[in-house]
Length: 112
Length: 113
Image 1: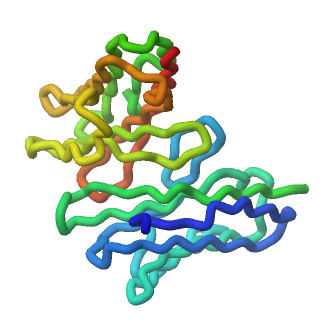
Image 2: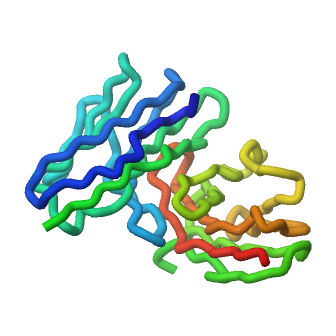
Image 3: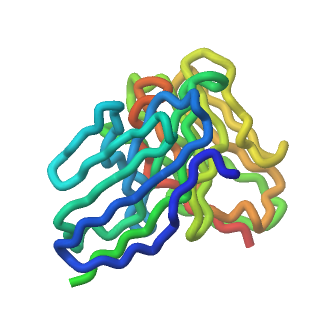
């Protein structure tokens, strides 16, 4: 089993739709959680950090469920520009402080 | 510079040759990471440097791969006796500390013929 697992998709949605991605992680000692966005043939860029209390940034909402060991990303009112691959990132500090594990990503395509 | 820089941006080499890839992290960032990404695949962790601590080399795929970070700043990833399966984009990232937001460079696209 992979340390971080994501549904690869692809998710194909119309503009204006709401879409949600989940990511599960296996290491209960994980401390930091992030969502990154990667456009085709580009480097990943931070979308948002994920806090225990959940956090929202405009149309994007991230949530953490430690008991079930998953994080989620909700995108409301999807735009064409949201088309990208979304990477879930988990950092564990029990063995290798600061080492991050990336999920393989979920691909989103928003269509007109 | 404002961001992480990597050089070269593209490298084409012949099987069996050695290559060196360079990463200049953001000034003041103590953590530096190397990843590899094959076409259509996720990021594969290679190595992680944090300050003056011994690097975490657990992701290096073979002893043909090595990396160093001089003076806590610039890092070089060396691949000896390259193989075709080494072809990928090699990404470098830095952060202010372990477990914090990582800023990625544009990557080096390596093609081994």
